[in-house]
Image 1 (cartoon, one colour):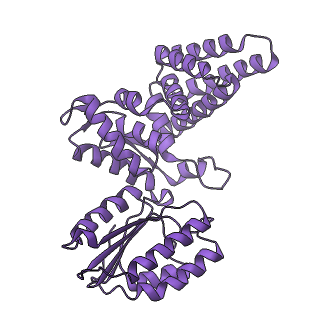
Image 2 (image 1 turned 45 degrees about the vertical axis):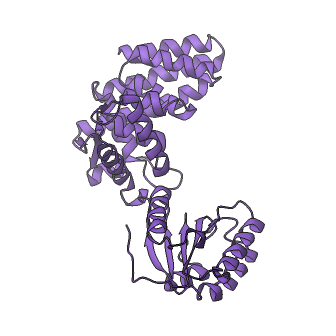
Image 3 (image 1 turned 120 degrees about the vertical axis):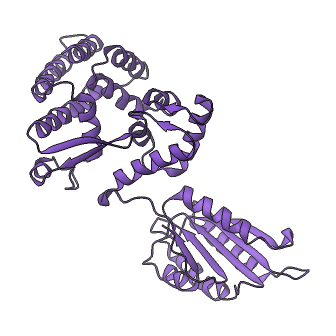
Length: 364
């Protein structure tokens, strides 16, 4: 969320939401354009090494100190800065020293002779240079939702809102599928929505899950999730087709079996929680919403980090598997266990064993 202060000679636009940072920085640069277009200097400060970062700092210093030959105000845009965080380059003592030396030159940006616009793709507020920069600059922050603070729901709502703003109607499962494909990458979200608009013929169309799968799918990990979803929904035709695609890409039969087993276990767990009244799955707009009681949260498995598993993934699984009772999914675990033993034991054809297991799961 933007929180601007009073206007100064330094404008800082930063945050983890790269799409929002770029959009707002572009709008601000257009608003700050001097009358003479020659009095604009843009420095792209996206770097990969310490030496490149020092060079971009030196470029900014030179730009601030070099006033226009014919007078007038000058705009310097330090763009896409990616070393104000705690990354490898940002932690470098050489970069820290160069940034500290830059502070004196930044003070010369008075907003009349020189205005400095900084767009940073990430910014660690605890770093000494950043603390001083935040004191000097008019600042706007645009951060992605924090997954530890209900970020999944916020991101799902953002995806739905952006689809609607683009003139598209989110159909059942479309928002969930976009989030599964893109995660918190808001920059990619804008690109994918443009692709969907072209594919569907423009505003007014309804985006189906299948449309997202066609336009956004195709990556290995996404295909695996589509395969698991097809099994959960009992769609044998889609499941066997996706399985053949994955095997053609040299995916391991054992690996696919393990991934599918994880989703089936979630279906069994979610079904049990739902049947015992410990979890409620509903629709919030066009995407799945999950509410757990305290007793239900206590049952959730933990990740290696100690945090509970994603309720988004759990809700997504339950919404696709609710046509069967929990006991059916517990039996499905046995089906996969038998298939695993046959494959590992070398007593059966791996592909046929996996195919038969998938068909059996879809039929039950």
